[in-house]
Image (cartoon, rainbow, N blue to C red):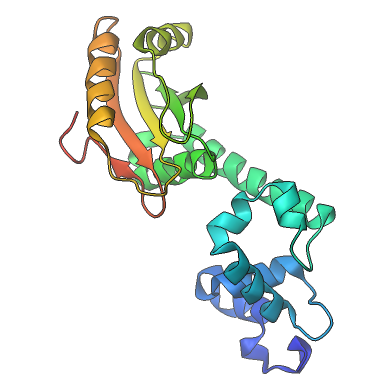
Length: 224
């Protein structure tokens, strides 16, 4: 049965307009993005199949163009549309941080860092440089490594903090495995960076580990 024959309150687009996007499942949200199905499948059916094939929405959104376009019902045009939508969401989150005090909205900070780092297939270490009022000056990805880890150099972090005239720094790195539990190595490098930054009077406010679900704060764990 085509979606146009469904009850109005069950159609994804109408459901979104009536109840908000948070009321929709991953498949329903994806169906709105796809707009149309394929012969024998509605957009919702197609979306469910894609989520099964890619083992979830996160993996689908993180797929490169070859993997993405290999799926039935997708192609380069959809890939370009998706990348544009993802980049708009990143810029929205970035601008929401820059408009005010980043620490006044820790959830915005978490969402922004997750949007920037979660989809990397290798470990990436990044910094949010903040002014004396804890407003964002700049976000930089400083180090990249293999899937097992990244080499982090405190001297380079200090150099970039001085370049931006930062008063404080928030660190973040992703775990490509999706597990956001901090490792012993994460705790050690955090201590090294905190000590190095203190030498130039820059505060280390937090270090987030990005995986699936909510990023883990080392400050909240008492590790800073």
